[in-house]
Image (cartoon, rainbow, N blue to C red; front, side, top):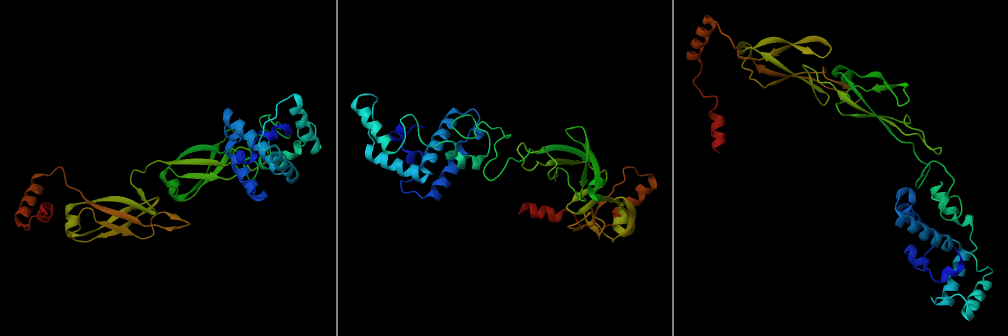
Length: 329
């Protein structure tokens, strides 16, 4: 930037800082603005690119103590006046620049004045300004380090038993090569497993991205998950529920267990089998067996007669009386 422009540009206003701003606060403000308007963060936005050029020019001068002093003195002498080319005014303009030891053709700062810009972004830019813009390093590093590689997403469908027990499976990567994925015990449907550093490499020496595997669990015909617990619905006959019985209940991937049904057990009662649920590093769940009284759909004559006799003998209380009372409020 030619120093003649210093008369016409208010760098403090460009950066939105006071004239007595400290170097530390100036740098913080510039970094915030640069992240906002950097071309890599605003692809195709000409206004953002122009704004970035303005704040870069302003910071390059104000961040250099010597140039900032010259700028302040020049602005004070010029009092904000505009000088036109030619005539006596032009001569006076030349005298001003001779005082600061520089020609009218350009300013003193060179590529090194942008050093802080590139230490922040450390990358090739859009070709405007001097310095390292134009050196390709693979993309915008962002504040605080080089670019992280992109994440890669993958999907897998596993059976219910694999999800509860855990297993190491193989998936095919983007390059066609297989890679191993450890499925932890107790993984749930829709859960994502992140493999650190197994994604795409960084374009400029940063850390690689991750592989994010989305897991779909096929439903089981008998069992469902309830946290670390397994649920199963167990049909019992009317007589088993009414008189009590010892029944067998299936377990996931193991032998059935015997479970006592107390006399008068209604449908919906849940019986618990300790320690037969899902085991993970967080703990061990239980097996929850929900009793469901099975109503026979076909009765022979003797069974029907027996039930009719029972109906005559059973208590005459209405099982829905409490429900109807509550419904009436």
